[in-house]
Length: 538
Ligand SMILES: O=P(O)(O)OC[C@H]1O[C@H](O)[C@H](O)[C@@H](O)[C@@H]1O
Image (tube, rainbow, N blue to C red; front, side):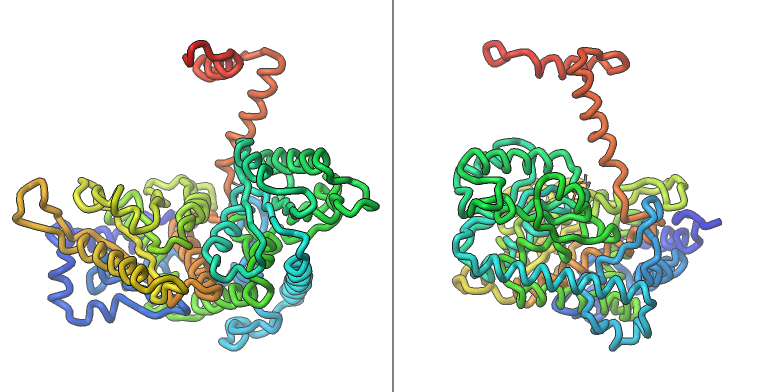
């Protein structure tokens, strides 16, 4: 029987190792004691330079973590992922999002001999990936050239929203269509309503993005968008120029449901693409319309370079492996319950929201994939805001609060087309914050003193271009895989989110029948308050 993670002898070894930190570990002294510290704890991975040296790591911490990784069979699980095996055990599916960015001939995976010969089903899957990709990019180019379309409205939620939104925002300097992009996710009618106020049916393209094509929020928004379209001059007859066929496209694995909704143009994908890993699939259509086929392929190329790195680099130089193990170290041994993400980039302002789904929906679990209960914490809370804004808000707590919270800085070497002085100021602030967290301030009075010795990681991209962004996102995907594998959890399902959806449906039935049997008094009272009209604002 498989051991749960904390029963592994390597786990106990790391607990003993952590004792050294209790006896007083100081980051600045660690740099003094080892002139090679920076070199050992930093690396260049494809498109991403990473400096891990300001973390609570001793000379041999990473080696001990790598031993834990081996004991937890992280590499074997990685091989299973690569072989397309059903590592998403609770749903009986593979997790092959990496295949979505693999070139038709196997690219770097074949060059690096990761894949010698694809088995027939894998060849078939790769062929299907490329036919859909080609069809999607062709459609994207057609739509880009269609000057009658001025606005693209993506309706989707979770994985069918966050990835495309983050990428389109991040690559704003690469958006060259002259079209406006809108992302509607919330079932709160204000979001859709505010977009519909700005657009006209004859110049708007609606993308209905939903892997399942059953998600309540997306379906309600899609129905409302269609009603608005028909009520404002659009038609459901193919004979009219402004018709649903021309103005709605579905992005889904459930092509039948899309057809039943009345959308004939559908781009499909496969159940082995998890929602939060789907921006590389047909769900990426808004990205492809925004930046065009060539740049979309660059996004895939950057991610593929990171895939090949993850599948081939030795542990000591494998960035997703190092970061995934660092996450386990920080969470389980150092006891840090959250991690702050601070992208020093306006383009990456929604990256944290994206990572919250990627990390917390993947690894926010407390049983192993074999059904054993874990007695140790798993995924840290991921939170944050872009810098320098965060500095003028919650950074106070990072510097002087009683809890130690590791911070992850993400910065760009080249700031793009805007004023150099702005970019200099932005990046220098990021570097100075990482320095301040480490050195602290002492001897200036209790209120002013900052304890310092606070850990951080610094990720540096050359620029916010499609390939670098692809690599950055793939880095996070694989890092989450690594920590999930160490904890022994299935990082690819999300049963926890089902419960609230089911209860919302049940409450609707209670409300319709006015039958509240079995429902707790607090819930009943809230539901009844909803039904009452407010009196004097109370
Ligand atoms: O793409 P859809 O099927 O509409 O799903 C959208 C989202 O909703 C679900 O509740 C899941 O928590 C997410 O993983 C998913 O991305």
